[in-house]
Image 1 (cartoon, rainbow, N blue to C red):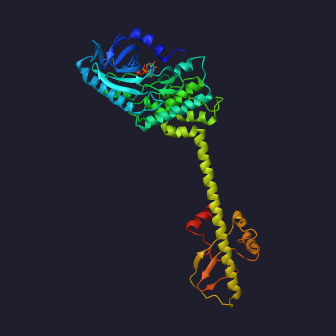
Image 2: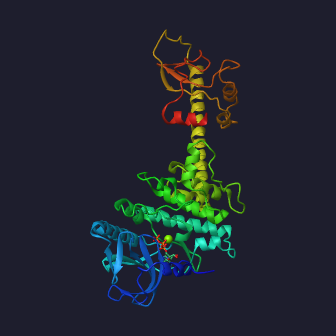
Image 3: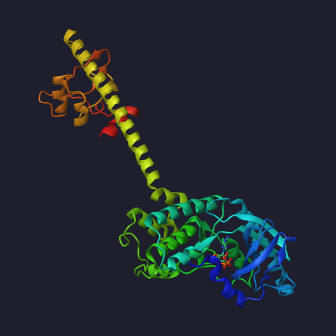
Length: 443
Ligand SMILES: Nc1ncnc2c1ncn2[C@@H]1O[C@H](COP(=O)(O)OP(=O)(O)OP(=O)(O)O)[C@@H](O)[C@H]1O
Ligand SMILES: [Mg+2]
């Protein structure tokens, strides 16, 4: 397979004449241009050597519709273009500096940002390998599902890191992911500055800042808000291409179809592709939802969904929590039931000892605690403790002998026995506070 650097360079070099020639030095001799690689509308890319003789990649800010080169120096095409050209150079520097702060093994490292020849440059780590598009298009190499899954996880970690640094990549696609010699994916070619450039410069506004098949629909419409889910769509589209071998349909066409109430031309991966866990494929389909609100909100959320270890950990925590809660509830129920039974026995003893006292005509009742035992599980807690009580409890409400295993009602100084009159609705009310919550859980 050809290296990424062999692909476009030879063709483009013969078509473009404004590029720096091999041997040209930059930043007072710190870098020497070796070879022109590519021109992308906003800038030129070169292979170069630094002062330590290491290979680096140099990107030169060169928006050719605004500028030209004479004696190496880059100048605006006309006076009217001067301000626009200067703002584009400023944007390039700003973006490069922000990018330089994002140090991550799966994101191309920025060595240096500098100005020379009246324009700006960034020196990047050279990634020795080839891009993902080569790999998709080559017949020789097929990545195993395990490798593909690992690669997506690595890239999600990287893109999550980019977003945490308040940056968007904005141009994720198979040609902007390089695989180094160890097969590690590295994100290159951030496109956010290019998109901003089309907004500040009329001359650049016609330049394409979308990639059909990979860009989400919100990238096609000026003024529509873009965020992490936009990058996640493009990452999903990249993996859709890698896994199925098909470039996904253009998101704008999908949007029109949905608006016209026609079927979405997108073909989900889940249920169609073999060899991958269903939830992994479904997560890519989710990232590629047409409306951002239906996608993962963050790279981390997507990662959590597909990371088996994280899922297993979460399930363990949940299981531990529910076992603990169950134990706690069961202890509380036993304790409460013991207290209820003890109180009832006490009540019966008092009733047996006390002389017959007619109940006063009407006195205000005070409910300390009332509980109608009606749950099988709860009744089971008492097994073997008190047969007669169980009988009453199991039959609560209808009561063979009218016995209702419930309210301990204190009626002034006179206690009313459980064989007494039917409790008032007020005395049967469910316990409040923690016991109330507990009773609700148990219902
Ligand atoms: N750090 C790097 N290491 C190795 N090769 C690189 C690196 N950066 C870019 N390349 C290669 O250089 C070529 C141009 O890449 P790049 O994506 O930077 O620019 P582009 O897409 O051509 O233009 P634009 O920046 O306008 O999008 C591609 O072949 C790419 O694989
Ligand atoms: Mg590129």
